[in-house]
Length: 306
Image (cartoon, rainbow, N blue to C red):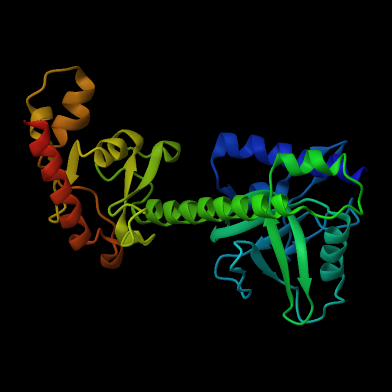
């Protein structure tokens, strides 16, 4: 089988799956994989560096949530990925070095919870350190795949490409962390909106109490609330607040407004109702954070009444 065609088929399959299922994919789905020319191609295996039988070189690298390997971020924004074991000549490590030399694109599967992964593709091995037992990984985009079809194998990576890869890798890392935060928050709220109890996961978000753009807006469960997309938007725009006593308050001008059933039941009907809470105390919304957010709501409310 043609190596390039299989990798392109894997990327197309991942694009299709994430467009339907969202950014995180289940291990069972990845282990089943996709069919290519009558053969089933898996994307994940028992080891972090995975090579399907039909390929000579690895197709994917995996970081397991809570696993033994501590992958990290370099100062330049690129990722460090641990060798398999301590022998640089292990066949998996040799395989990744060969991917680097031949500029083979791979899939990076980042575990955010048990059995749940956020895929990033294409990624490239751009460095290998036998002393530190780490590979350097850069996330790239479709432009890189098009360049591979035209650039000779011996051509050097240009500085603007390095800058672009560092930028794209940082964006990918941010997306992975956001998805991990979402997974933790939705799990704590038993996969439902804390206000209306909607249980369709594709319509749920993990809303930050203190925005993630704020230095205090840490991606911890107690700084998040599971909200459907309507109530997330209303929360962000200060149409509603969740007080430190875990009770919903709707902005006064909205309570006095007359509109259709969505306003009546979707917002006005929530006024002074208690929210659904996680069962664990350490996962419940931080009361100090809620108070800070509630003060912003009161300012927005005063402005709306002027």
